[in-house]
Length: 113
Image 1: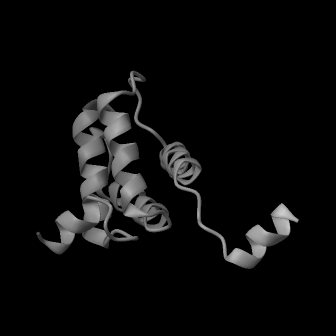
Image 2 (image 1 turned 120 degrees about the horizontal axis):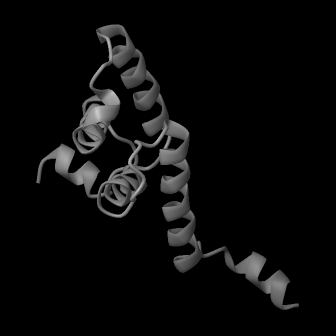
């Protein structure tokens, strides 16, 4: 399995710049009209913002958010980086609720006492 494939499957924590650009390209392919009239400078700025934002979140949740926006979202407009990261964070919180972090025995003992 390639490094890129591992990261997109969520087995790594952050995405590379190239993987972030690929996420943006997939959104662009899904929301063609929204990005069709961008200048080169606008596209570069947009990519920089998205790369910075996407690299703040675990790749596993980025992939889940991307899938949600492509396959589930019915809004005809593309997400902003804030909306995208908010959706990724929802997936992260859902995962954390289902898989709580095991605390050390001393903390658990204090809760029981």
